[in-house]
Length: 221
Image (cartoon, rainbow, N blue to C red):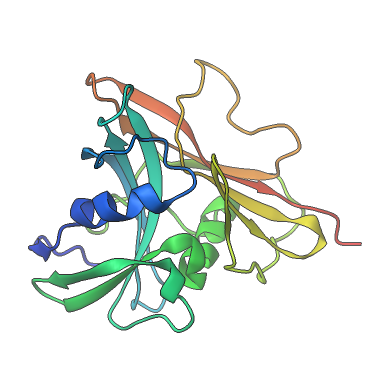
């Protein structure tokens, strides 16, 4: 299990995201600087113990209405080859030293572990405490066998989220702009073969729940 160090980060994660988020196609804020607050999230473990994997949920209150974003991040002790375009920034960690933070959709370690979560092979972990599962994160998988392992990390962003392709029409889509699901509505969309859902804090103090990621498995024939 990953060890979570409670130590200082310079700059902080929210400071990095304040600079990075406005550059994303799915950012819905105005021309001013985002006003971010942490609203939730969870972690996954890297089987090799080298890469930190965090799914952050942040809320921006700078616009006319609050907007909540899902930001998957990986933290590495050295640059990831070929991923310069996905670098969110670097931080000085009080225990681990310099860390390179990446948009996790472009990091093969995060993508592999997200698929493992969807399929039920790993469990989501608490965002802030070591060795504690996050029971609010739910997943499902109704596919036939494991999903392809050769997802590319050439993720495509649009105004709603990020999509990663695999052969034979399989896609993994991450919802970047989070929206609460209607009460008692099924979370698994039609024709989907898997999903991840979670909860986050709203600015008014209430708790909401919605889709984080959806898997569509195409034909393998």
